[in-house]
Image 1: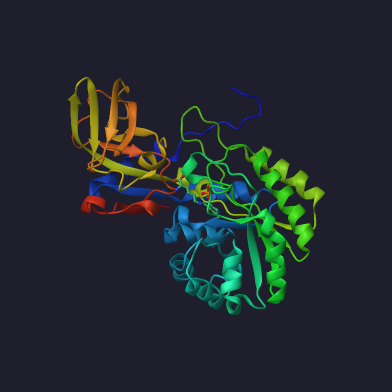
Image 2: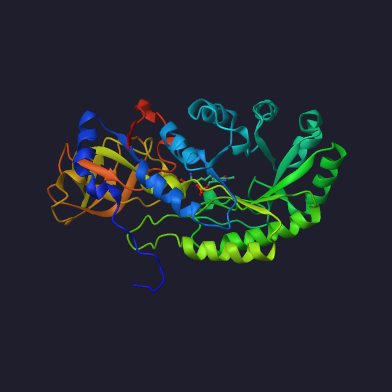
Length: 386
Ligand code: LLP
């Protein structure tokens, strides 16, 4: 036990096996979302006094019940497409557009027009949009996303900063952007950076704040500093939970040094990943050349993260939770791709057999949101547990 590190509580689903088996009986694959866990994660962030504005990055999981839960807790919502914007206004009736952020990447012109028509805050991350479509941005308040010259994250494919990344305005172009905005009578009121996803080092965000504050000082019209999302969660049993206390202390310190800005965050994963599980059924258990494979009726189409990022998700046989996990196996899906593997060298009970219900843990973020119908497999069902 490391002193001062937060300890992990048992996952919610360990006390909900019967309900989950009941949901699986209706049909698999199925995602189940536990709203009390979403609320609990929201409260952990609401307790961080240095943060003034909280936006939930809905791309992680746009289920309407989750959006409403987080909106009720006081979170704003961050969108990256017109589809997400329309979905937010349809799912959370009456939400104040001032609580909605539009942070697109390489979006077509019409999406910016739609965003302003909705009255939401728009973040730009290049000069091209301003100079090609001046009429859209004339006289507006804008947020500016910058590239601080480096990225971070759990996998190269989720790093969103540095020369190899498509996101953000290079620091060398900030002055030119500010000049172009001024010429259009537009005001840069927010400055934003999001360096990547799945970051565990709490000091990351205080450093981002410090760098953004220095830029904001130079611009002069900024009132809000948005330090992005990216907070990780513990996927593996040996992972420590994200250290919210250390994170909060770092933010309090750096904000005390630059008190004149409002501090905004936009996490996705942290709020919803642990609240969601994917339920699947065993289809076949096959041994080939010394490797035993447990096949599921959910594949990389239902949960892409392992195939895409070699991401690790806990895998448990819910039907035989009392049996020791004494069999080494690979866990695979039914998709015709060699990357359709949820885990290798995992342990499940030796009696694991066709029809058993298997749970893939921590699948509430970037699970259903990235699911697809490849091989003409149906999308998973989604269920909400109050
Ligand atoms: N803000 C911006 C501008 C973002 O691009 C993202 C995520 C977030 C906030 C929320 O990041 P979070 O707190 O969830 O890390 N599909 C990948 C993650 C892609 C993240 C994309 N942008 C995964 O499953 O790991």
